Amino acid sequence: MLLNQTKSEPARLPAALAILILVSFFAALGTAPLFDVDEGAFSEATREMIISKNYLTTYLNGAPRFDKPILIYWLQFTAVKLFGLNEFAFRLPSALAGTAWATSIFLFVRKESSDRQAFFAAAMMVLSLQVIVIAKAAIADGVLNCFLAITMFALLHHYKSGSKQALHLAFAATGFGMLTKGPIAILIPFAVTFLFSLQEGTLKKWLRMVFSLSGIILFLAIALPWYLLEYRDQGMDFVNGFFFKHNISRFNSSFEGHSGSLFYYLPVIIIGMMPFTGLFFTVLFKAKSLLSDSTNRFLFIWFAFVFLFFSFSGTKLPHYIIYGYTPLFILMARALPLSSHPWRFVLWPLLMLAGLACLPLFVDRALLDINDGYIKALLAGATELMGATYLFVVITAIIAVTAIQFIPHLPAAGKLIASGVVFSLLINFYLMPLAGKLLQEPVKEAALLAKKEGYKIVMWESYNPSFLVYSESFVERRSPEPGEVVLTTVKQLDKLDHPTVLYSKYGVVMAKLRK
Image (cartoon, rainbow, N blue to C red):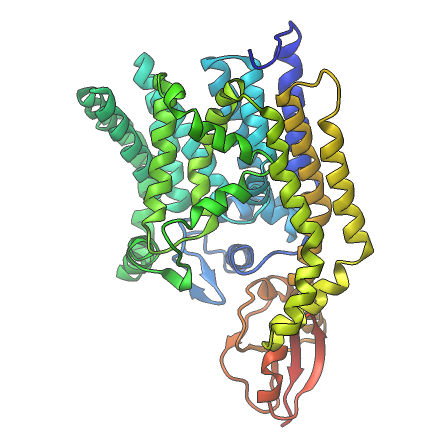
């Protein structure tokens, strides 16, 4: 038994999960400025949708943006209409999707095993470092992960029970996933269920499932209209931009410089799963025992496919691996009772917190070796921000996580969740606002100054789409001419002809050139 069952659990555990969701996904949701590039780009495309009243094609800085389908922009548009043009509204769809994602894990695991295991699996998802970030980000990935989880759970339920309702739910969720991020919403369920059916020797059942006529009709009714209308509006530019450039090319080649080795995602998982990383290795070490159960085999195949597919992809980004995190959280909850030394799990979060405590020393050392003007200014800003308060907060977190291990009668699962709460509070109320202050506050302040003074901006040797959101204007991306106001970095100042600096902070510079 993971933990002892009590009669009040059916009421207490969902309430406890709701509190964790509020702390992780909604607390301080609008505190940090929008992060570039992704948050700024998604939010600006939504702002331009509001201005243009074109609810079919998204634009960024006046040019068509074919990166992602339409659903995330519609969701952000609705939130902005309700709560105004601010960070909270842009991030709200991701937080709501994260809530639905966690709820789907809880409901699935509760049906498969117990309330306690369901709570533990969902709570780990809610409190893990990378999910905390993705469920607060104004991008499409939180929404896609929600639809992927619902699709996969419904398909497995249909596979076991033959439920027509579950099959229709899977096709509907896939349709919305297709509207969120495109073909990946089809590829993962299709490949995972095929490999699972191949392993189980049930390919005929798989063929009936994936080629269900009623399911396909439902999927097409949800996803197809926008794709047809977008093609009618933009023609082959949409096909080439979305399908070939932003989908096929991402797998075939390194897109926008985002490359990495075959082992790229191992450190991502180790950091992204904090403070539950130890359980990830328990899953690997206890794989033979866990694989005796068919549900666990499905979950292993799900994670393994995502891991291998994106490891071999030409383009690698940290958040891609999150598509395989849902099965990991469930396997980790199932693996905990198999662990011989659960006390060792605390070593991973303590190691990361120790690294954070030493970070100011690494930054000081790096300042001596860095010659790049912008990086040097950024590191100098980090040194300024990571003073005594920073060390106090991080050391307090170390003490708290350590003290949790000595709470009498608190089981291993409880200690892990309590450590997760410490991490969530640290990230949401201190580290994320601190990162925002260093990386994005200068962009936001420069944009607000440009808006106040009515400057027409040229963006040169930098790309900060959040500037467009905050300045509520367009920019030209090119070399500046005499008399123009340019947004750039301190690294480029020496290349300008007698610039008058209008704003400068942490390496971000807004200057006016002499006529």
